[in-house]
Length: 306
View 1 (tube, one colour):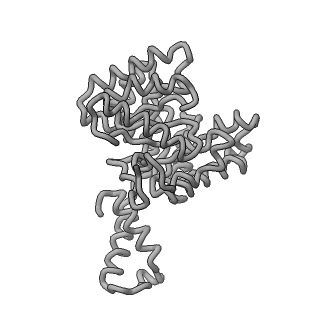
View 2 (cartoon, helix red, strand yellow; view 1 turned 30 degrees about the horizontal axis):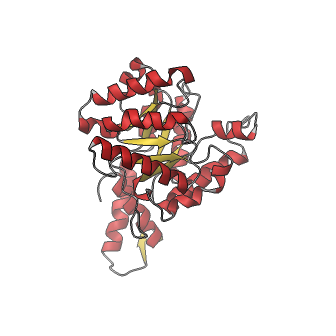
View 3 (cartoon, rainbow, N blue to C red; view 1 turned 60 degrees about the vertical axis):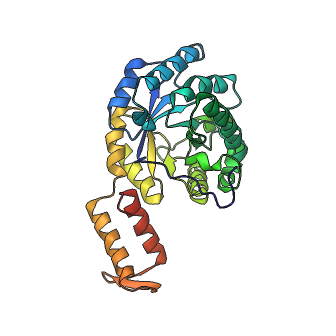
């Protein structure tokens, strides 16, 4: 059980791009794995028709089992929601093959993480895997109830140590609300969906885990994708979901710190190091305080320099 002092474990490696691949398509899975996505999400939920789910979970398990253990760290599985019978069937099929983690759709708070944690613990024990070896990322805004519970992920509950990222979604939320339109003529999300994005970001920050931006369905418009990716990165997001391999490179580029950003971050750290105990330092004509130092260190950590 997590204790009040148990922080969520850091997500290993880069987590800029999270690419979905339909779990019932061997060709698309192979293409996704061969590409540059930081994390490949083998999808057993939305991209697989109900009558194909049994075949999909068998294919995903086989694809995982065919690869070296160390290569599976970036291979995750989006399982079906906890409320469906497909969820347990998914876990029974894939956990023995040691995916890097599972993405839980339609999460509705800490109780869902705990329930999934218990399932994973039993299956890890039955498969001879290390306890807690399967990470969890959660889609936290896909139902109306979920919107009220994004703050729960920061609490003290069994399974919290497995949680490594939060992300959000607009499509399922709009269906739950009966909304016919998510975005305006300018392409920007309506207020309800901007609120969902903000709740995900704030909930992730409170829980101490990365926030991951939702998908952009217009996969051919890579310029718009990169603009959006840069905007959400500036807002605090650490990565973005992708639905097509063509989206991966723009996402990776947008979430990779530039040489100029890294140089400035190093200068900030050096300025504070030169004045131990100072609350404020001057750099390039600007006064910087401790929050600037925290941001600089975070940027350098993302680049693997701290």
